[in-house]
Length: 218
Image (cartoon, rainbow, N blue to C red):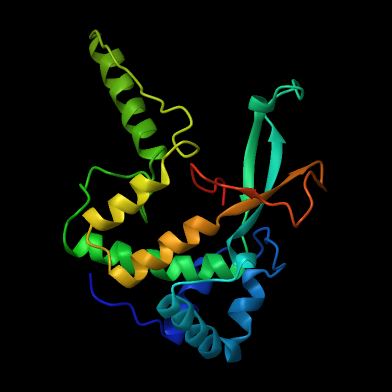
């Protein structure tokens, strides 16, 4: 992968792609303001580049707020909650820029199969299989054929992935070493604050460290 040099145009594009009023993280900043204040784009690009070269970020930017949304009426069972994590807008902007560069590298070198839709820009990982399934069902019904089908659901796929494997994947895909070291450093700082019914369950100084899995829902 080619070395990454972050430009103001990268910041503009990342801010343009993001929804304007998506819930913000600890920085309290919405993308609408980040996109509108064009005078800050060059400054942000320079600071992003410095953070990338130094392979570090302040802990504020790698700390999320995880809102626990109940899946049903059984609110006494922790497994019945869906964790939705809101990350700082500045952090999302920087990782969006790096994600775009990594995707460009993967696509140009045909690293990922064209059949892979999940976690891929422009893909519809859920909708496309559902549409295919619906079409197959109609054809089978119209032609009065027998059909056997199976769906595989990976339980806790995002919660349980080891960070060591994420690091290994970055190496296997030949991601630029500066980007790789930066992301590994950020992973080591990942933490979150649990929030239930708009109340934080832990003090800000007692962040819950994320040792396995990745941020969900944002």
